[in-house]
Length: 344
Ligand code: TRP
Image (cartoon, rainbow, N blue to C red; front, side, top):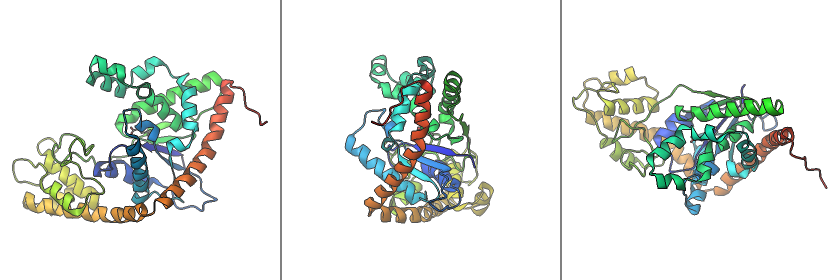
């Protein structure tokens, strides 16, 4: 099996869109349980806290959200004997390789990255000046994440495609300048399970709860909140429960959510609610989402009550990741001609 690496940023609380879009796929992609000795680390997942600090941040919040996200990923079903989970800053090789690759990636390449262009276009001239160097350099950190683990495949959404392309370009350039060092990765785009849209603005992806508290269902929302948000979801004129993203974006979103959490196809959902009213449908969607999240919430509560256990698992993950990353970093520094440090 090809080694897979993916990262997720600890910013904001996890919502149904993240969960159904990315996290559930990670969970399902884990190979069958192996004994710890036989573990191949074919699926590696990283809470990328160093990426979270490329925009202004609050230290206490960062600590909290890093632990919360790790706990959430464990609650969602990342298992110790099936995949590797760790926190990026716990493995120093990420920052070190970033420096080396900063000296291989070019200024022009980074300036052309869509995320950077978008951000700088949105801000006024003065504000661009205050974007951090880290924000500009973010893609090289991501390249390092990927290359450090001899990653073959990076499952990403469309918005990250360009960064994986950069990883390929940098790996190929490094290899041709300094000899075969890095595995050249490729992006894979797993079929989208569900594209969950904001309940209040069904033309926009469900995103941060700060931006749209009523439109965003958090994985840890209690049943009452879930019900309230779904009941007040924007629907469309007419009364048919029919999937049509252009004509009926609100209802279509609810149909997709219902399908994703129950496993039903869109056609099944349309059939089930044929001739029913929006109100009845919304109650069914809310119930289904509550039931779907219940076991995750229960496991989260259990783990959150025992942060020592979460931290222990992260420590084991960091050790295992270090053992994989250090030899790759050593390969790269040696190839680049940095003088090897001998033991004293
Ligand atoms: N940049 C990615 C995002 O914003 C997160 C990320 C960081 C990542 N390092 C990665 C994803 C390595 C895949 C592989 O979503």
